[in-house]
Length: 149
Ligand code: HEC
Image (tube, rainbow, N blue to C red; front, top):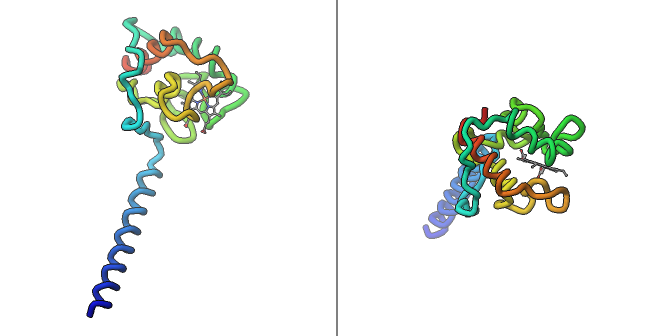
């Protein structure tokens, strides 16, 4: 009798863990790379810039051109990501979208340029270019919060 109970428990555990791993795999397959906000102290982000009417064309493209096109432009598309047009930015890279319009603090783009996440996610990568200034991060936040137009 005891053996049967033990076997049943084992089978149940196996079935449960299989079901759980399928669930986790499905979530990971959904595409968009979500920032794990529980690991990030977003209070360290510079506040969004006060400027209104921030646009990709006028304000953001010049920042990307200087610091990002080298790896995310016409010649190279690291992480399958291009930043040289607004549609390309909104489309995102190999892990899906990199920003959520209206929610700058939850956007991978902002966490990356503010260098608050994993070291691997900091952009530009360490020793591969000057980090963006607080003012530039603040402007990118304002742009995303205003709808990423
Ligand atoms: C020297 C090359 C280089 C420069 C410059 C650079 N990046 Fe990257 N970027 C990479 C590489 C390599 C990856 C892929 C990392 C990976 O797959 O783990 C990447 C990935 C990314 C991702 C994640 C894409 C995804 O879907 O996972 C974002 C967002 C990003 N870069 C933003 C930027 C921004 C914004 C700039 C400029 C401020 C920038 N990068 C400058 C090399 C660069």
